[in-house]
Length: 560
Image (tube, rainbow, N blue to C red; front, side, top):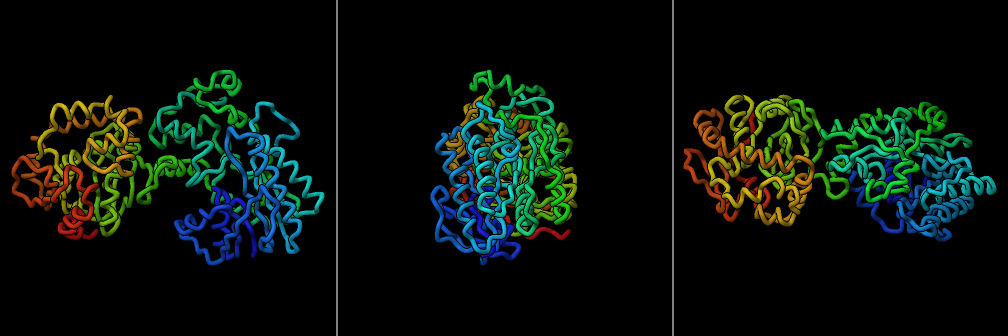
């Protein structure tokens, strides 16, 4: 084998394995449990050069492949660890890898991957450090000393906070609090420097190390990372949420009760204005032709990944995805903004994830936004019709415009005003033609009730299974302002029923209506109406295949 990667199932290790395989190397992945192979398959990585080997670095290593390059990306990364648990992997395990590497006849390089703060400790020991960071500092010194004693060709890589798809710890928890309105202040000072690097850049950097001369160690981080308050502000602006203005020094946070601050004491040592010796890493990257993406672009892309994956609790249902500025606000958009076959507008109290089961049955790409102020989208500050017109601006096709429930109003107005932009209009459960919500139902849909409604109760209220789409909607309803805007949208739509009904008489594009048999129309219309047996108000969740067949009957969208 060309290389072996210890810690191959971790966030860094799996990306490194993927990079080495992409370069045509034969790679042994040392794991205790093989969760790596399914992940590589999900990333469309060719695994013909991969060998999975079982290894536990907390014990002396034996019976492993003869390799040329050894990467140790294994670590026990968590706060609140006991000293024994932390040392078993981070110190003892690291030394086991080194001592095994020293026996390899073809060894070219041992690359030991550790944190960016540990090698900068310079003999200092802070009694406030937790078991994790203390063990990493100890391991750094022990590995360097032991490698020198055994004449092992060692390179230490010190990456900073590593971001990218799948990273849900560390800085990600602060971003999650920001997203959910639970970050009242920025921890640290105005000059706190929490540097980042992307996992893709780090994997490429690590893959180049074994062929380089021995003698250099590398701090892999972006010196241009914004200072922490600006970093938080950048991500807040991109996600369309409010950034905290107050900073609270780490020293004060240490003295305050954790129940008040929400800050883990072990994370406070990272709140520093220290800078790091990155000259050798920058020179190396330039020499091998590597260039990291701009830090602000990387942070925005990571924010999209975090929100799409609900900070690790869900899986995105379609890509591409992310925030886009539409009508002055940050709109969450899933799918193809230029060439969609279908544009899907959700109703209340849902978001664009409502369409996930249906989208799997539709041919061609879809475009599914969260309406402004709802779901993951920020309010736009402009009328909904202006927002929809701007959203549709980049679209080059004449798609089938599919609207659900209360979204049927803006969809009708767009089709009436822009008949040349829409191939056909499909209204699913159009609320303006159905019985208005009863007074008890409206009370349940009030903002205070919605804001605290758990997913099982929301599913029962809507009469649908408690799937990921309902859990996604429930998560958004708990964010600041969303439930209030849902309730306001409901009141506004009820008030405009007659106006929207009149639009049906003058719209010039073909219109079809689809309803569930359990949620019929109460007003007669001179239009094709399809009924799905057994469905209620949300047929895209309960009967997606049947709804897709009715959409197919609407005909293929017109060409661009």
